[in-house]
Image 1 (cartoon, rainbow, N blue to C red):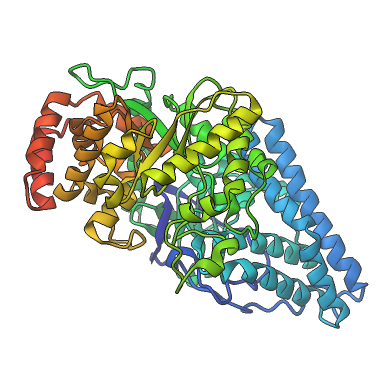
Image 2 (spheres, helix red, strand yellow; image 1 turned 90 degrees about the vertical axis):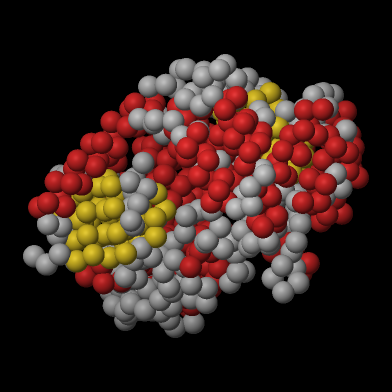
Length: 591
């Protein structure tokens, strides 16, 4: 055995030890032509992989049209069966994601494209490859990471169809040959269903391509499965049964680890498990500082899976419900029914809890085809003006929020507000919809993400029901950085200029009796949390996976000391100076 190490990018952290298991039984013929992998992870393979012998004309000698149809039908049924199994076991959130792939397998446009290729004389497998490539490229070439990851779902279905044509279907057949011990799944592109088919046996996964916002990545994080992306294709050359060590924090994949590495990994996993248990033990305790200052702790979510994780971690509610992700491939403004279908599975889990729903937040890094002609050089700017130019788009979303969230303590948040008039216009539309539905309009707040909004914070406070600071965009704007730059870190929110902007925002809000939430990644960063508390922020909203640790940290901080440190930090010149004083005075001992 020869020890080999492959380096990648982490989509879900952790350490795991298991045996390698390939999920793809056919060559990786369905790459990401024309786009590369999302977020710069991996690279496309185009038509790499030989599929010429996988069924179809000249293959098994049967009717290629029937072969393709039967293969799509089989995949749709396999995924439906897996979804039923998950639903029967109470895992409805995971079942919903698997069903999405099942719907893709039933999509008549995708099937039709494959059948047209077959009738034009292409072998069945080649027809599927070309149809999936055409369908996926329609999404992936829009130069949007989220859309590229939607294309990944299409490719996953295509690979399963190819497996059927090869006579080596996945799903029920694969489950019957499930391994005996912990497995590390390895594939050109890991799919959401791959992580679910073997149940608790899956301890980690490795994928050549993919992105951190894919369905597979979301499921991996929700289940606590380490996932490494962007590794060398050479990892696929190792046979099933090879021992593999995953260090997702590295992130690295070690094939045939040394005995000492194996022992160290086991110790790390045991320590991590103990730490999670210790942190989780305080879930029932109040989110309050040592000197009695209450800090509401809420979650940032976009899916029912994340919502379930937030509830399990005893979040006070949801401080940011992202709503745009399901509509990044839309060519028309979503209808009220479409919004309702997306919101209901999430809001139904939050009855009686405070929930802040952010309206569609389209911007340079995420905008749909419907706004593509508005972008100049790939830059859209703020999405809010386009929403206001189509008031029915706002009305549709407001109607869905008020309907689906009737049992929740609702708040509605408008992103990227730059003027008081913009917020007032949104409030007028909301009031009209609420009157139409004969319900009270919930509080409407402004996201403070722009220096322009900070400058008019006092005026905005006269119109808003609350403020929510989007630390990611605000930090990037103030420091003049591209928020998509990998070098941009949540720790930068501790920069004196950013702290001054937050302080001004909090002062303006509190003078009007408004609460201030922070929903960016900085709300969970250990160097920033004490400063946010010291500046008077009332609510911290973080990823579900960060809730336990942030709660424990809050409970070990003294709000009066935090206030002293924050006041001192705003007078510094550099980020390093701020970090130094935080470490000296607001760095509690953590489990």
